[in-house]
Each structure stands twice: as C-alpha cells, then as structure tokens.
Length: 248
Image 1 (cartoon, rainbow, N blue to C red):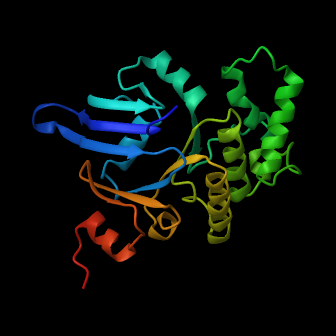
Image 2 (tube, rainbow, N blue to C red):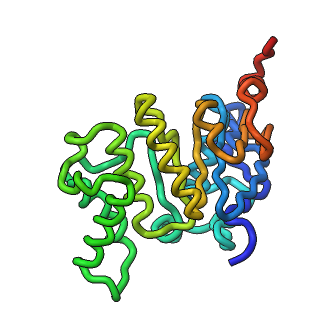
C-alpha cells in the first residue's frame, strides 16, 4: 500500500465540559511515513500521551481523522479498534506489562491468541515465539518468569511480544523509562536494528538523549504540535519549545 502509514488531520480530544473543558489535543496534524523512526516529546500534560493512545487505537478522538495504513480508524467501535490493534500494532510500554505468572515464551505467545491463522498449529506458533525471543537475545531465557529477569530483559520480552504478529507499526511509550543507563542503551540499539529492518517506530519520550536517536522529533505542547524536526535534533532548542523556558 502506498501513502503514509499514519495520517492525522485536525485531531481534537476534549475532556470535561463548560468551565472544566480541557483540550488535550487541539487540531493536531501529523503524518508518519512507512519506515520512519519518530520520537514524540512533550512535558507532562502536553498531550503526547493522549496522542499516543489515539495512535494506538486505545482511545478515540473527539473529532478529526486518523488514517492508519490507509484506513480511517477514528470512528471505529471498541471491537473494531481491538481488531486493528491485533493486526496492525505492536506495543512497548514503560512498565513492560508482562503477566507475572507466565514465562517469557508464554508472554510472547499471548498476541497470537487473538489473531487466528488456520495454516499455523500450536507447535508452529511456539516456534515463532522462540524465534522472536532469540531475535532479541533471549533464547536462553524462554522459561523464566518476569521476576527472574532484569528490567532490560523484561523490556526485550515486551519487544519480542510486540513483534510476534509482524505489525507494520511499533508504538513505544517511554520504553527506557524504568531502565538503568546500560539497559537503556541496549533497548535503543535494538530499536535501531528493528528500524533498519524496515519497522516503523513511533516513540514517546521526555528524555532528549533518547529522542536524539530518532530520525525525526515531534514536539507537543498544550495539545498542539509546535515543532516537527526532520533535520537533526537540538536538545537546547527543544527544551525551550517544550517548557517555554528561556535558555541563555
């Protein structure tokens, strides 16, 4: 399919009413091409998390349009959104979101329960999950539960799970937020490898040193896109844009 993978037009998300009305998103226009690695930055309350939730089909906009892989998903019902999530999206969360009683292998296999393939039996699905864990360097940790893994290893399991159904888009919400510096570098390196393989990645982060690894940085403030930088990253400039702070 041709055209942008993500096309957002005049996106609005309003909470409350009357004097309590809050425009979490206020006329956002964003286009993300296939194969891009994009970071979305903004301080707390900027609207970046709301935008990510809508891009991830976890929420619907109040108005505006959202085309994902050529389909307008902005007005789909809950069941239709769940179908889109299963087929088109892979999620990486700050808190990993692994089920504690399941092994790494079982956690990775979970998304396959919701996408049926009559040509693939249980053994084939299991082998695919093993290969996904091997691709993130965890072939030796298949049967470990989350509490037996380090934070970096848990995030690798989450990445393997996100990739298992070969979605065209990976959404990473603060993927290094709960990791130490060494593990953060390892996860970013892994995201770079996925990007080099053609995976489209949209990553929310508040950390300039993490955002600079993306090829493009979108800055959000007060529900609006205030900067869309495709030509390199300036931490000083973007800190000023994000916070309104005057930097000497």
